[in-house]
Structure formats: C-alpha cells, structure tokens
Picture 1 (tube, rainbow, N blue to C red):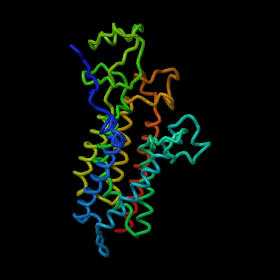
Picture 2: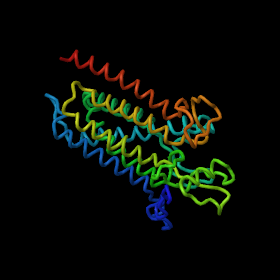
Picture 3: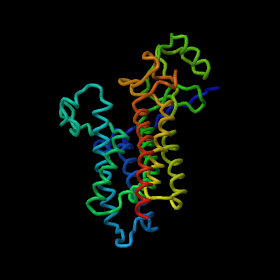
Length: 322
C-alpha cells in the first residue's frame, strides 16, 4: 500500500504548455487575477451593506475601484521589493536596485518578475491604502476592516497558484496525503534513513540512485487556513465588531499565528535556511526542533506583535471619537 501521492503529471505552470505565445500564460498569474477580482467583489458587497458609508459621504464604485487598484499596485511593489532584498541571498539587488523591476535576464530574454513576498505585499498594501485614505479623506481604520473581509478569500487563489507551480512545498512526510513534487530535492537511496523512510511509506527505491520523497502540500494548508478558514472567522464577526480596526487586527494577528504554525511544515528556502536555529546544522527538509525559525516565522511574529499594537491604538482612537 502506497502512503503517498504523486504530483499530477498533467499539471504544468503554463496554461497552454508548448503553444507559442499562449505558453506565456501561467496559472500563477491567472490565480492572481482571480484573487484581485474576488477581493474587489467582496469589498463591493461590504460597501453595499453600508460598512464604508459615513454621514457626509456615500461610497461609489469609482471609489472602490480606485482604492483597490491603489492597494494592488502598492502590494505588488512591496512584494517584489521584499522578495529581492530579503529573500535573495546573492546581494545582486542591493548592488543593482534598478534590476528589482527589470523583467529581462542578462541575455535580454523576458523572464517576468518571478518572486513575490507576502509580507512585502502586506506592508505595501497597507501603505497604499493609507495614502489613498489620506488623499480622499476617508477613515483609514474603517476601510482596512472592509478590505480584510476580502483579502483572505482572494489569498486562497494565490496559494493554489503556488501548488499549480509545484513550488513552496513542505518538508518530507509519511502522512498518506504527502505529495511527491517533481522539483523537490532528491536524496541518495544509499542513505539508511532514506531506505527506512521509503519502506515506511511503501516506496520502491531500488531502481534509482536519487529518491524524491513525498512532501507536505503546505500550499494547500495555507490556502485553507490562511484563506478560507481565516476569511470565515472575519466574515462571521464583521457585524459584531466593537471598534473600527478590530477586523484588521484579527486578520493580521490571525494570519501571523496560522502562518507561523504552518511554517513548521513548509520547507524554508534552501539558500537561506533558518534565520534562528537551535542547531545550525539542522536539515531544512524535516523539522528537528520547534526552536528553528525561518524568515517567514520571524516576519509572522512581527505581524502578531503589530496586530496587538494596532488593536490597542484603534481601540483608543474609537474611545476618543465617542
């Protein structure tokens, strides 16, 4: 009996693999489009319910489109900057920052802007929303609450895009839902622990020198818990919030906490490894200690702290306005 799954062979990063020009269309980009469209329509629904209207101003569709467009542009800028300056270890982007938004390689071939950081997008999105609210004289806390009612459900599509790309997979696992991802690191079949692991899951490794072991589908964990699960909580409590800013603090702290836990199942970037480690030689393909922390966990911890400070400040502002 096999206690693992093979990554579906029919899934390719390109929507139309092998088709000239159309081969440039990728599932990941399409998932981003779905995410933004979903976020827009949910934001529009909250606006229709009166969540954004004030005594002196009624929100229009143009306001919503302008708001979310500004947020998306700043989100993408922040996501790209964090990805290149924090997650890239070559130092190239620090030396040549103009390459951050340069979509061509050294041979002038179009490569796009591969690499986006959620935490960078979070910072960029907040700044974009803040500046938009300042410019249009709208209550920032109220608009943030409306936006976080939409973000998690849209975020679900982003993580599904990661799965379709076969990237950001988790650590090795013997769970029956573990998936063998084609691009994952392979291990020598001669290693005793690899032989024991393969025997445990019923994998035949006699025909090869290198073995691709099943991994946690951490992209799907994140799609569910950081997306659908977190969205459900916020959507259920949105009509019962005690002050403006409450929903945004729930989202920020909730995402930080859920992602922090899931990071124990997700494999850190190979060129970065652990930022903080109990054992500096600990492998990244399996979890050997809860005291080994990835870059994502450090940033998530900062999100949790920020959410508490944000909630306290928002609560004090609401008390003064009453």
